[in-house]
Length: 321
Ligand code: NAP
Image (cartoon, rainbow, N blue to C red; front, side):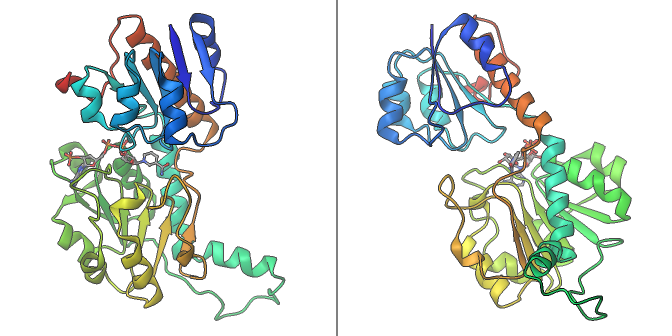
């Protein structure tokens, strides 16, 4: 069987694929263009792809022999799942293993924005620090504040759990009720408007879908407290970026911590760069050794299980096949 891997993978999980199949890897590690993907997917039985690969209907159509699309990510908004389902191709993802890494990063962004850590780092490096100053970069304490989680799934719950150490009140917005989280964290389910109006920190953890695209726009940002922070480790398109940039410029909100961007896979919006009240990271949510090696293992297991005719727990389109 023939397998295409669209970029270099961390760890040694790839060796398990090489032992079993004829494997073609994009060793250049550059994001493949659509025409390159179309060419390379032809004649392959499986593709192991990343969130930087836009696997649309044309690519799936070209992959006539595909038996599985194994995505190296929990989010699968980069794949036309409907097109895969209509051809009977299972799509798999890698949930769970990156939950703690992403929750840690979200907390890094919460503290970095509220306490101006990134701003302070730049200041010191520019050799502008001339000793302790009672008015220098005074930020907001996180302790005792209200945390609003939008999307109380695996990552949202892990972010909320970490707030126990900061004695925070937790509000959440989710389509279904999460009774376990309510019991464990005393979290309250509220509508999005209430969450935006009452939270000091709003952290986004919904998947990117037709329903969540543009979920946070100017209207929603206007509802937030002037002293509040928005944290986005979900997907760039959940927020209307131009509206957020305007809200940061006009100080409609106090700040933002951003890991994901609308222009991905090609980069971030340069309009952010001159703003002091935003902390930017380059899509690092799952970037810990443990999470990335675990994702590689899961993506490889998913692919092998399906190719060998076994089941995988991580088929996202099971009901539509
Ligand atoms: P998850 O466990 O499936 O959680 C997603 C939550 O969002 C669920 O509780 C879901 O519950 C809720 N949700 C879905 N649609 C909604 C809507 N329209 N309104 C309100 N709530 C909605 O997924 P996860 O593992 O926590 O991952 C969440 C997302 O984080 C991923 O999809 C991915 O895009 C992103 N992520 C980013 C990074 C990074 O590197 N920055 C790393 C990992 C993941 P209901 O369906 O019941 O509403």
